[in-house]
Image 1 (cartoon, rainbow, N blue to C red):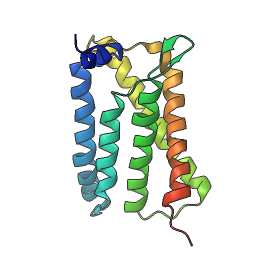
Image 2 (image 1 turned 120 degrees about the horizontal axis):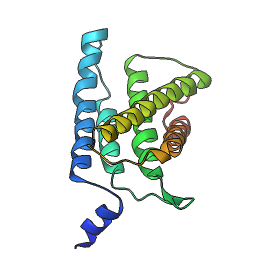
Image 3 (image 1 turned 45 degrees about the horizontal axis):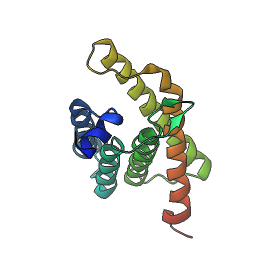
Length: 167
């Protein structure tokens, strides 16, 4: 067995998982701009943010995660593919809707988005386990949601320090 296939096996990466992550990445790049056009009559800009979000999401599947209390929690996958991914989507939406928010509303909207997407992901895992499509352990949900939130917070701090235009 090659080093790469051993690593992917150790990280519980399957072909179906790769296909699912790739599908989400493509949907983000293709469907989200179409929704903005159709529902809000907005011609979306900032496509690089969506491309970055898609790449970050897809690559997060392959990142190693630390064991926490002796269990594999996929912490890094959720920190990057949940939190930072959501931060990029949030910034895409904020810029396209031209939202001028104070820091508290920025954090609140980002928090609601990361929580909503995180819960949707956990419900998807629950459903796919129930029908036998995946075998995702359900005992790491708290860590997943925590990692998503911390990743989004890290994104927001980076955004505030380095991206936010200075007045």
